[in-house]
Length: 197
Image (cartoon, rainbow, N blue to C red):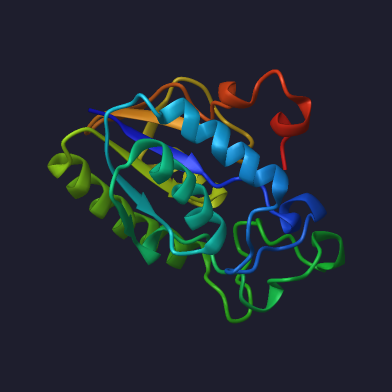
């Protein structure tokens, strides 16, 4: 079966280009994105949903749970990279590029620490995938998706941006082949939902 990697739906901080807080909920657009994604997965043989404990991911996972009836397990290792003291700050107000290779946010995670955590999360994902009868849905965050894509997955195409509520199908293992990648077909036809934030 497949691993279905999902990025959470949009939040008000996404839309305002502000560094996310852990408890930031989905905005109304993000809720609708999550519902559309859940409808797309309704007829998949989902055996388990593995989810970050941050609010925006949990709200997205709850929509998938409602559509599929699959059990939900929370894993804090799937959290977004911690930007420490930068959280809650508009990107335009930051004096540093928080995505630069050497950036170490005060009170947050360095890239090395973040990638090590994502590696531990991926080990758990692999274990769950091997034990789950059906597809494993993994609901996480943009930088977690990026870390996995750059370091753990073989992609059919490079991805510059991981849109809100995007879906990536992963099969094999190892090598883990991802195709389609960062798909938002479930949002197509509605410009209010398919924009990148």
